[in-house]
Figure (cartoon, rainbow, N blue to C red):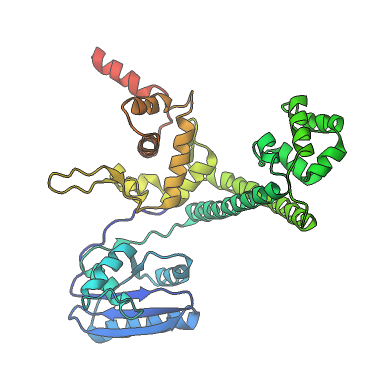
Length: 420
C-alpha cells in the first residue's frame, strides 16, 4: 500500500499556482490564483471528460503565462461527486489538497463581512484557506485498501437499509397484531420471521392451532421456544385488538419487506465474504485480528478508512483522523468538559465504538478496565469512548511493532519492572 497519512500542506512559494474547485453534481466552479494576486475569475465546467480537459487546459495556460513551476488544486472534503476529478488530476501528477468545510463556512464571512454563499465565492475562500496553510494532503486509497473502503461503505449502506426495513416491518405488524412483539420480543429472530411469513395475523395463529404452533416453534427455534411461548402467543391471538380493515394490503407489504430483508442478508453476507478474502492479502491484518473481540468486518473497515496504519508516525495523528481527539471549551473560571471532536471519519468511529462494546463484555479483554472507569464515576458512554480510544492505540502499536495481542501483557511488564 502507498503512503496514506493525511498531513498539513507545506507553505506556498512564489512559483506555485493555487487552483480551487467548488464541486457540484453536474457542474463545478474552477478558480486560479497566482502568487502576484492576479487571478482567473471563477469559471464553470462540467463533470465530463470535455469539462475536465477545459479545467486542465486553463491550469496549463495560466502556469505558462505566469511562468510558474507547480500547481496545487484544492477543494472541500466532499462525497462521490469529486472523485472522478481527483483521479483525473492525479493521473496528470497534480498535487491535490482538501479543506475542512467548517473552515470554509467560518472564513467566508471575512469576504465582504457577509455570510453570503455563492458558487463564485466559495472557490476563492478555499484559496484563502490554502494560502493560510490549513489545507490537508488528500488521501486516495489504492489497491486492497480502496477495495476494503468500498466494501465497508457498501455494507454500511445495506445495513442501514435493512434497519429501515425492520422498523417498517414492526410498524406494520403492530397494526395487524399489536401483541405479537410482546410475546416474541424481537422480530429479527428466525422464529419471529417464520411466523410472520406463514402466520402473520391473529386469525392465522388461531387457525393453526396450539398443538401445531407448539411443534412449529420448537422446530424453528431448535428447542429454545417451548410450549409456554406457544400458549402465550395463542392466547394473545385470541384476544388481539389488531385491525381488520386494509389487512390484505398490509399483508402484501409485510411479505415484500420480508423478501427484501432476506435479499439484504444475502448481499451483506456476500460483501463480508469479499471483505474477508481481501483482508487475507493485508499482512498487518493478522496482528489486529489477534485481539479477541475484534472481527474481520471491523478490521476490514478500519483498514479501508485508514489505509496503512504503519504510515502514521504518532497515535495522535490517527486519533485525529478518527475524530476521537479530545478538546475542551474553557474561559476564565469556567472549566469545560473534555469531549471528542467528531471531525474525523464517522464510519471509523462507529467501528471502534462497536468494537469497544464487544471487548468490555464479561470475559472481554477490556472488561476490567471498563469496570474501573465506571467505578471512578464515568458515565457508560464516556467509558466506552475511552475504551475505543484505547483500542485504537493498541491497534496502532500492534501494527507498528508487528506483534500479536497478548492478554495481561501490561501486568507482566509491571511485575518485571518491579523485580528489576
